Length: 149
Image (cartoon, rainbow, N blue to C red):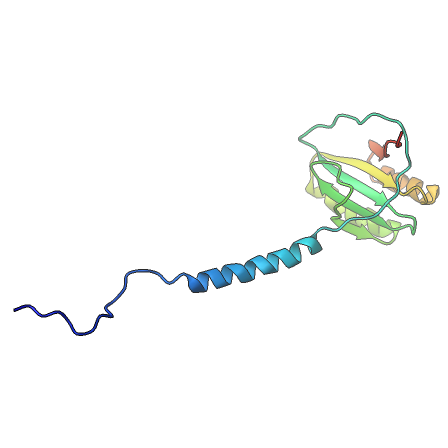
């Protein structure tokens, strides 16, 4: 006569996923909290000018240099003109030229766009253009916003 074992708790061949769900929820909360902190930008009020956008080459890397009214410099390096992100910053003109020279060595085709806050001193923007020119950069474009009509 065959007897069944007395205990009904034999080995189970299934995985307990409850700890993995807990870890996933903790990671989700961490990403939800840190994601808004990663987006940084520089608030500028650009002058309004009625001008058409220039076509850009998709293989080029674009450096968008922003000059704020306090005379500080912010820039972003990417495939398009990005007015909300910031790759790096500099307080002085010398610091800006040194850091941009290092960025320039890393990228083959680098196109320069300059944005200036409308309350920025014109001299600060011209100094930035002159510093880029001394570095051998001759093709610089200015970024404006279209007027609300």
